[in-house]
Image (cartoon, rainbow, N blue to C red; front, side, top):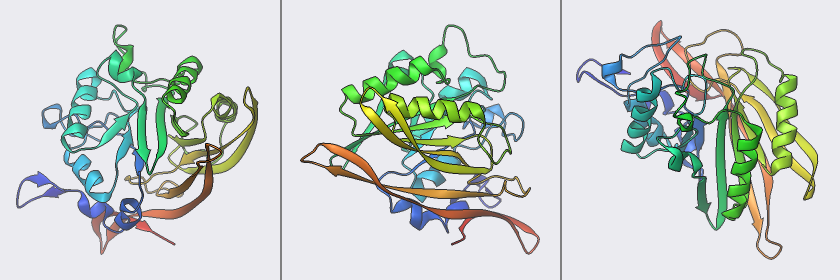
Length: 287
């Protein structure tokens, strides 16, 4: 993304081919698995990431409205990196959920009303790659905690959310099937009142399935996508260079005051890394 002529970064070309699919949705969200902590903190790749803030501009230009920031790389530049990332997301007009500057932000439920339907989005991660969260600042990132998830769902319902999406960073890297923890937690989270779970972390696609759970409300039905794969990355190994764009159609019956997932379809995507021997890095819809 580095532009020799200007000395600046521009990543719009990464998403040019997939943009029409992203920008056409009422709400487009993705997992931002990299700090945008600023040039002063050095741009680096694995194992501790930091990318130019212009990536946020490209995501916004491509149609993204919301990014989840609760993942194992969120603290790669420490507390200062978390705060700088949120400042840069604000700068480019991207909404976020999963990390926070203070308790007030952490306790705030992301709620977006679209065409009269109130959609809540929650986000959690299994950990931070062993990087300790300051003991006096647990608000910095949402870890997977059943009590926290239950409380967040309760707060979303108190805000009259019609539909709740939980983005969960979990599972085993490069494993194409969900593990027992993912399956058990998914059933619990659907039972708490979440309608759709969108998973990340394995870096390969994992299956999707409908789950039916006994709850206080009776039988609850939810959809879980255990892992969405790699939307954009430099991983070239088989299964690690692909993903999907998931399209959810949500419908509300105003008379019955019930909101349902009417349809779920997906567009397979693939990351083209090279063209004529030169790096290009672009997300291609491969249908």
